[in-house]
Image (cartoon, rainbow, N blue to C red):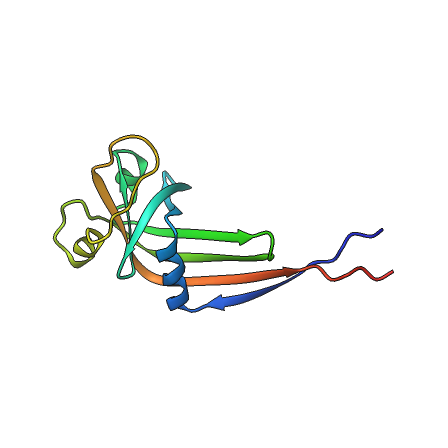
Length: 145
């Protein structure tokens, strides 16, 4: 029996739908560059008025992300329905721990809950410049012999 063929359709999601997805989830990935190499790390996040925020301890995120262009992504896939999606936020990272700018004030209005152990007193935020998303459905047509 030959393998089943799969076709994939991509559908752009509106910014409103992307923000809705971001509000419904808590785990994402932040990507930035360290020593010329991309680094992508998981974070538990929250959203406040388009601003993504997460808590962190001293380390790569706190050292390299603030002031840099970053990418933040969440993804989901339902194997039963064959529907997947992703939301991408591109922007600039801000150390929102004690800063008094609008992004930091907005970020402090959200309450991210870190899942990993340890104390995370610093707060980083992503000031979004672009928010986009895609949804796809994988259909597996019946085989024809």
